[in-house]
Length: 280
Image 1 (cartoon, rainbow, N blue to C red):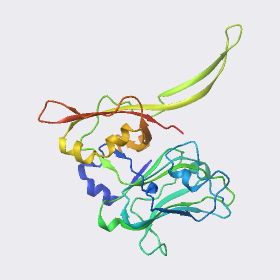
Image 2: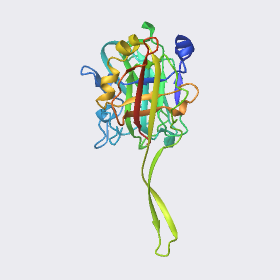
Image 3: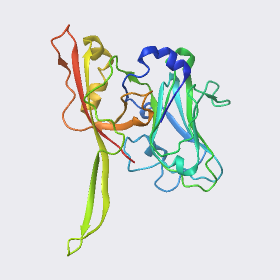
Image 4: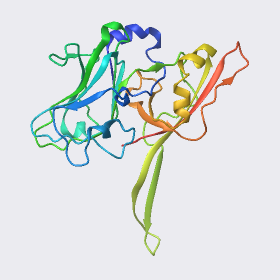
């Protein structure tokens, strides 16, 4: 599920539905100060929410209703993309908002994109304007509707910016509508009767081929993303973020490295991304 501010839609114009990636998590900046309005349960550290892994969780100790996850930066930053994966917000009937503060946390306002009350536990993202008016040193996710004593868990949170590709993908991509890789354990009786099956693991693999990229886009805009992708750093990917808001996925490299290739056509280049997506 993706919530996009009207200002960001205007800012992007015809690019609003083009593929995007977001990979550099501001929560990992050494000077970032992470805090919450609640303490944590055993093994539920705040740092679990930006480890990049999905097996460990931030587990707030809900001694009261509602909870926030806050980050304070050494200087104001723009957060144009923020996201959540591996959560149970729908199960709890919670609403999540992306908020910012320009007065040291005394007051908080929405960053532009509307809050989300999810009906499933699918990934969630907010897209906001990239402009100086969006600068703030304090940012937070505010989770409302979480009851006192509830068992909220979140695997990964992301605060950062997005890269929007200048070209679309219309063929050769298998959308992750449902998990594309499902490993079963099927049971058959001695007489050959089907007894039942259990899902052992499930996930999705995604292959995206982006053609007609300019050398300047590849050599400048993608200069940090491609080496990060090749190193196995996880990232966010949406292939048509306005038309198919549920196809947002938290991904990592699966298979070969991303290698830009000259197409031999007007000096343009092609880039293929082979990804594994988390299906929590």
